Length: 546
Image (cartoon, rainbow, N blue to C red):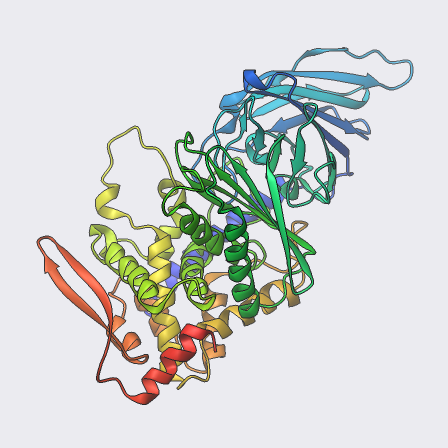
């Protein structure tokens, strides 16, 4: 593709900014520093107080003048800045000194800024940093402790040792008597101690601690899966059916993508009518899902399975194969990544398609769901103002962010979720149509996972593989499709032209009906009764994952 001088200049500026950001991040993660031995202990002596007690023991200081501790301003998977330090209180330090030296035994840690505490350690060989965290918000981002249970997401609870996020850490959970423990790492509900290769993996293991959750298990492809249900309402006898439908989703998605590289995966479901919002959050070996209704109510089971279908596809798309900027993270500033239209939008697309391929949805339900995505994005005022790439960069403004000042974002921004979903729908059908079924977006995703995660050398301490750039993903898509897709990405991803829905849908014997309805337009994907047999065959292959 021929680029204008302005386009080259803009691309050069963007790469320069990314390089500068990477340089700052590299300085923040000094992997040359001697490793510390870092141990966390989480206690909950008074659940009714909503206060976790956290203790961090750091050994091997080796003459360091001080140790700084920070708690993240945000957490992976939810990119709005929440400043978890708001709920940290009573931070103190205790030193253990070299023989013959004297150290302060117990003193308040010095607070340097909103998220950082410092403990002077010139004569110490080890130290203990302790604090309390207020937690009363059940979600995929925050944490909750009350008489019913403890549920924590690590980013909102655990500080990290500045400059040592790459060091191995351990966690011991001191639970109330009779309470069980489960997370993606646990082998049994009696396990209370865990080891992690680094801090980033520690906070990637949401944990439920309670006396009364239930666990259903199944196996797929030699891997163990656990469906954990913590109900605060009537289940209506649906718990077994929930596990069966989740299993069908797992089978459909593992048939689509290469075998996952874990031995066990855990679905953590909470059905809580008192929770103020529903949620779903992806993690390396687990997902946490909150439904704001009892399992026995109405469409709650279907909603929970739909969320599970989305979150489970993240096993490949974002938790392992990840766009540049997503791990390891700089928690002192909002995330900067250009690829959430792939990481989240494509996952939206496959979460829905997987339910059809699993036999949980029929064709009509799938087409209604995609029609809703098209209408939802095309009726937004900002659809012609914000590109998929820009929406990704603006995630801290979009992803459940709160705005105290008045803004015009309702008229200017679009979410990378439906934006990316409609890109994926169109791209998949265009590739299938233009190659006469020889390739598809399924092939692109499989190849991207293999190349960027399985085959590439590790680009950091965080995980194997390297974080891809948007340009690398786009080039790979063209290679797999065997046709130049650069014009597609330029017009519909980097810019804001209307996607070629009509061409894409026609390849599989469908059409997009548009009905004006006042200021909005109703969109409906319908079967084309005049479609050729070749188009019908392509549709069948698309729906069945062939």
